[in-house]
Length: 508
Picture 1 (cartoon, rainbow, N blue to C red):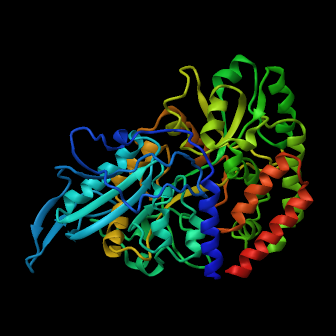
Picture 2: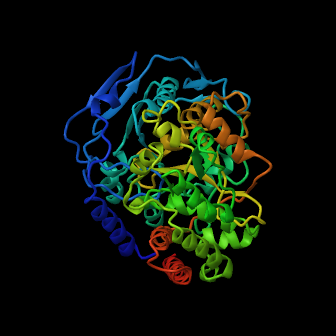
């Protein structure tokens, strides 16, 4: 791997986002308000808090570099565990929840620094509770939780200078996951996973994960899953019923839907062009999966064969997107929107459909109109004679290669696979657990339950990602916008993706 090229890419990412303005503001005070707890906030100037925004491969966005600068360290006198001493006199912790029979854990000492994106103070509460419980089980461990809207952008300079946080949840804006992985910033976990057990149990994590949850890059396991869901097309059933509209189910339906949307004074589809992967994974890539060829799908999504991108199947699907755009289906100006802006346009019925993930409801909870009844559909550009496929996305975390407290980070990684931790996280974000746990009693919202029922339905097939296509992601996103704008046709799009894949392979 050409390290200079990777570092140059990271710098370009920083420069790109330094020009993006403020979009959504959450005050520092909102982040540190934790009811019933003593909270210590470090408001001093911290060289780790950078105001340089950065790009992200993940489906979220925030543009205010002044949000969530404070470091929140929480302590709570919760008692999820009991304590005793082992024969050597060292303290151990016996736990009773998780993926199996309880077992004693040696108490940790030292420090641990955790990094996580969160849109609102409310959405960060499940994580705060997990950290509090982990600290309660390890009283001599000092945990610093860095959480907020712009935490990834503020801490990016530390990752680049090999002085990172110890543990990172990678969902959210500002974390260039692919470039970081290519630069070796994440600790390789293959050997660890062979013997790692769910914290407090005798259950091996590798045996407790659902099938298809691990994604390797060039054979390396650099990231671990935390939850999963799928992109799809969202619509308001209330508006559809009032206007006698039917949700499109396939390419042919989408081609006819534009006129139906225009008849009620709306555009058919909007999406965040700044993060056009929403469109690619929500509407386009399921049509690639619909060919039912797992080997071909892996060649594309893993970018292992440049010829996969000039294959007639790829050209056919991209041509469908090009033709759909030709009907006027996409809202004018959508390529300039970020994810919050596009979601607001959709909530205001400027557009009837939007490709998005399961986090949509939680992220926009303060802005959803009272009569709005959001509903999830797996419809894509697959043709009417093809099966419907869902492509699960997997939220991931990583342990830093150059973190100062790697052993504690690995212990925390074991902890997040406990049943109660998984439940509160999934309920909060409307996502699906990645462990083999019964989630039938999870307290999901109506929209979350409906979307999860669709995704897991046996009526729909699933095609899991097995590897990452790395730097091809950026060109894929560029191609999506170029096709929508009719700047290129499908043939030219395939040629550009073919070249991007060649470059990725040469740099691996």
